[in-house]
Image 1 (cartoon, rainbow, N blue to C red):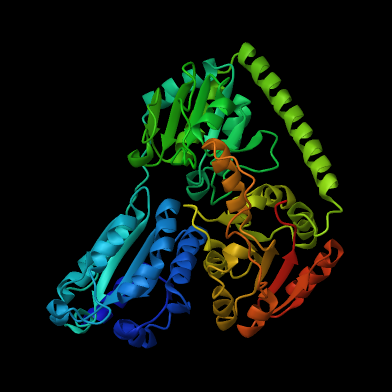
Image 2 (image 1 turned 90 degrees about the vertical axis):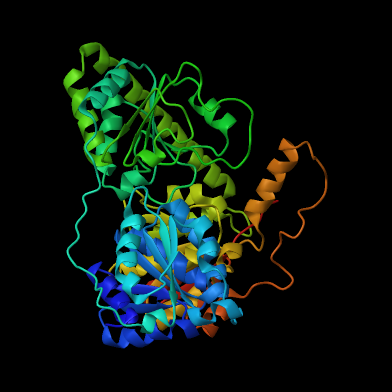
Length: 554
């Protein structure tokens, strides 16, 4: 069997149904082989970054290992930013790139380079297949490493001549690996004692809670303890229901702000995340001296990685959190119950006060012209179905997205990790491929959209029904906010304008761009027109783009 056939058979035994890619000359063996493997669909992207972004979100949405196919050195280089995002998102992903014929290795062929060295910094493992005999064992290991905790991307280089070599070393089907271990019972007993003795506990949840099926267990634990719940600052999944009275929002992105938020907490339990991702350096510790800091993780790699812990446990999140909750319930005393009832009452009051504050804020912005992002998202929330899946890259409007949609269950929301923009329009392709029977909506700022605008063509080419929402403020609004923060933090106060952060002269024409890539659309400038535009989008056969003009930063 030839190397290319072994490659395809390896994908088959690992359950691969899609390859997200941008083809090139050295991919000819793979592309030619697809004809003989009709069960594997090739999702064509017009840029390598788009292919990786779609694959990463597909992995998150489907729970399967994704495959992305690049082309030699320039193609892999184009994809590096999105591979970084997949690494930060813990997406199980196999990234391949065709390589030039190894017999030309010492002659510096066109498009040739050390692909392994290029990919290594943003992957868990990078390797090139040197002979067809290595194809099956390398791919077996690649799938294993991509899924070992925490998951992430693996790179495999595929020289064109190796793809055509013969080998009898074939892939073997049937490998089943149970990776999630049981938590130490003594550790759970000790953790339960610490939690029960606390007067002001707090829970912080990461994306792994949703990814590993611990969503309901965290809700139960929070209610048992009467504890407030925060999520990571950047989140890809909904790991706790947004409307729940115990939900308090997202953790800030600098240590001082986190310290201020948690300084009166005597017990903090972190569940399933990197904890914490910071943007700005600040002096001082993240936690107060009197705070007992604890953590439960699926894998040891994330446990106590950034902070010293008073206690940490490795164990499957769903059974570990469920077991902890069971232990707490068994140990509750009347004094505990009274404190928990009081904490729960306080959280209900805070939630109500927050809802009233949000309503006042919305009313203050209600008649702005151009409309505010908050008003636009409120109207979108009313117009779209309750069971819609949101792929979000609104960035500065994320809080308005959270308050405008029913984000109370896992897999109702996906967003990018790592901070690189352009993931929304790329990612929605992968989410739609994973959820073909669902209404899927991408919400993106105009600046972010231009990083992966080619996604519109891919959506049209593969007949994917996606509603693309562009919030056009004609600026990089988040950069203006960050410029304000920079000037304040580094005492660089000035009356200077925001340099090179406006997207005007010329104005971006998203409806025209969409039409040029086979997608119908319309522009909306008044809040009252949003419902009609969404109705047009939902009734349209195929994807549809709605460009909503919103106000920028004053």
